[in-house]
Image 1: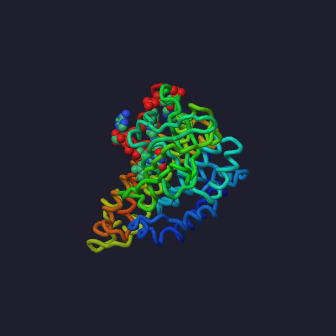
Image 2: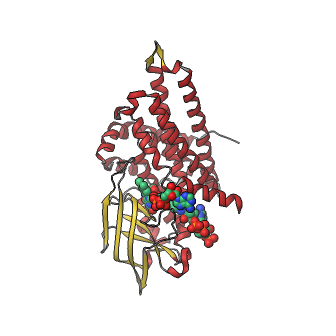
Length: 379
Ligand code: CAA
Ligand code: FAD
């Protein structure tokens, strides 16, 4: 068993760290306060190869492994979890789904510009009445000759207004339940496709989250991914990998908060000595470091299983469940270690605490991860 990162993975980590420290950190607080999308930074992430990391070079991607992707996600999330989720959706939901299940024409037309970062993608599964209960899709896609008419509403869509390419899940045959769900590529600007209001969120405030409305949106049959009825499997298989990305995001939030707390505890003095000399603070740091290490090993294991063509659904759900808990616990304790300074924006940890919460909700809540895990155990 070898726990060392390869030369390439170390280089990716160094590049992601450098990018995050140089280009994300300086205005992360401002962008969070103003809910401002990191337009310039996302463009740079494309140029640096962070938007299509795992996509084959044939389609404009970096051809890297999933471990490299998690390493980059951790470094970027340490500084800015909003930039990280924008990156994560594009990489592990949109690009991966298209590369894995799209046909050659779809890959050439849609995957290439997404993998290079020229265009941005969104993944549209959730609806007002179908979040955890994702099989209860109300959005319909009705076949009419050589096209489908899509009608319905999607909720909570990351990159909702900034994306160009949307993977939309819809019912093509309501009588067949989840086996009557299909997946489609929808382009921004198609007639009848309206971007709804932007959500005002607790955390990841500089990523844009929108509802999307579809009224008789005419989508050619060439834009269906896979066969009719394949859409739910498509969404679930895509989310199995996506959850590794969110686990890495949670890991990054936790390790970012830990690193800030470790440094602060050496500088801040109370009762005539640095607070890290107090055992209560030492024990908090010890617990944080231990849990972060465990979370990182789980994230790497899930990524390694995926890279080696082994079953990773269970490991990915476990990694997301655990890393998101660690993110929440670590960030709460980081605020505590910072005392009053932790409660104001300048020290970053309050933002990381707000950002941590979403990792327990999206790409399947913690309760849903437990359903996925226990069903696997009891199968
Ligand atoms: N991998 C592969 N297939 C899976 C699967 C998985 N993890 N989970 C379910 N399936 C398959 C099942 O095998 C079944 O297929 P068959 O009938 O062919 O065997 C089918 O899906 C239906 O599964 P269930 O019978 O288990 O359906 P259910 O309704 O009881 O439960 C669920 C399904 C696991 C709860 C599912 O609805 C789910 O994962 N919900 C959470 C949705 C989610 O994660 N949304 C994220 C939206 S994207 C997002 O959030 C992005 C972002 O924020 C950035
Ligand atoms: P609900 O499903 O209504 O759940 C409410 C509560 O009930 C939760 O605690 C849940 O765990 C619990 N619960 C539900 N069912 C069960 C059960 N069977 N057993 C035990 N507990 C249960 N979706 C997309 O498709 N694409 C995106 O890009 C995207 N981005 C998002 C970005 C943000 C900022 C947010 C907030 C959400 C995003 N989502 C996205 C949606 C996200 O995936 C859903 O919010 C999530 O899956 C939960 O669905 P829900 O909000 O409808 O909650």
